[in-house]
Amino acid sequence: MPRTVLLGALLALWLLRYATTSRRQRVKQLPASEERVVILGASTLDGLGAALLKQYLLRGTEHLMIVGRRQEGLEQVRESMLAQTMGRRSASARVEIVQAELTSSADVAALRDRLRTQWGRIDTLHVVFGVTSILPILGVADVDPCGVNASGTASLDVHPTREGLDRIAATVQQSSDGNLKGTAMVLGALLPLLQTTSAHPAVVVIGSVAGLIPAPTRAVYCATKASQHFLVRSMALECESQAGTLVPGTQQRRKHVPFLLVAPGPIKNSFVAKYAVDARTGPRDNREKALEVDEVVRATLQRVDKAQWGTLVLPSRVLYGSLLAQLDATRGWIGRMAHRMYHY
Ligand SMILES: NC(=O)c1ccc[n+]([C@@H]2O[C@H](COP(=O)([O-])OP(=O)(O)OC[C@H]3O[C@@H](n4cnc5c(N)ncnc54)[C@H](OP(=O)(O)O)[C@@H]3O)[C@@H](O)[C@H]2O)c1
Image (cartoon, rainbow, N blue to C red; front, side, top):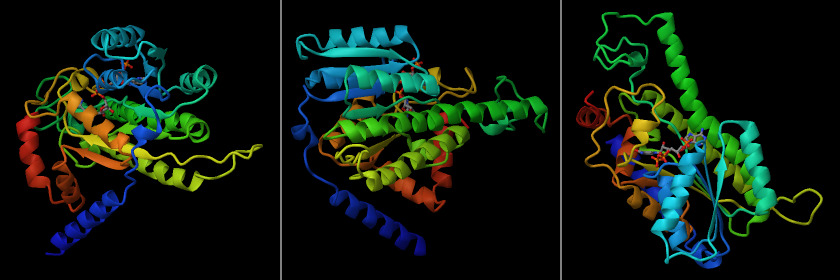
């Protein structure tokens, strides 16, 4: 009973917050031809970044920048999305490419400097990039009792070796770098630009349901996405305090930068197969019921257009699961789902 009351109160608070969120149509205040959009993590053809690029081109956006580590992948995405939108996009549309490792301060600072000199302004920042991990912690050390190990074979050992512990450390480090450190660095570098150059700034970060609900074989991914979520939500609060403060040496006041944190469930694309830091083999997941890339992008842009900030959980019914997870009341459900999806 107390759990139900608490859950009801949480839900009521969330609904109240959502209902009182600004309903101003951002899309009307910021014409597509004026908007400067940066998409961090857009070098995969079946990725969210590529689909975002396509949608922006279709709505008439002319100033676009896509960022990733692989130049070839970025060029492929640009060519493909320009071809797919031929005749339906603005003739003046330009898609800039920047090859950057977004966990490197040198690359992130160079990206910021390029934006300052080339555009002088950014309006919308999409933080899409990230990495995943697909093994249970004991599996990273090759001693998983359920047989889901980095080596792909069953283990006869009970206790991890020192090398196994080092592999756990490396998995945590790489995941944390890709999901937490990178997000913190790009927000640190680009928030001042958003605050001081745009009349209608916005930040959209792709988190994950994994950051809301713990799941077996996803311990490190869940931990790093949860930390990314808290970073983003805390920075959104910091931005509220910073709004209206004077920019030194000027009479200009910093704009409020609102945040949308998107927490999708599994998506039908190659992210897990390509961006797992701990294994190339092992239990892959069953994505039959996963979200479509376009579904996630459509829902995200709808929220941005309507200036409905906060957190977007997809599919929306998972929101209830995430609230129950705070009460540790999802174990049976998640256990059954993990068995079906991850064979664990
Ligand atoms: N797919 C899913 O099932 C799913 C579900 C929920 C949430 N998410 C979240 O969605 C995001 C990924 O989007 P996606 O699924 O559409 O896959 P994706 O686009 O293939 O994601 C990876 C992109 O990020 C780039 N990237 C990764 N690390 C980078 C780094 N350190 N510096 C620069 N670029 C980097 C990759 O490009 P390079 O290889 O060229 O660097 C690639 O373009 C992640 O944040 C993930 O947590 C995914």
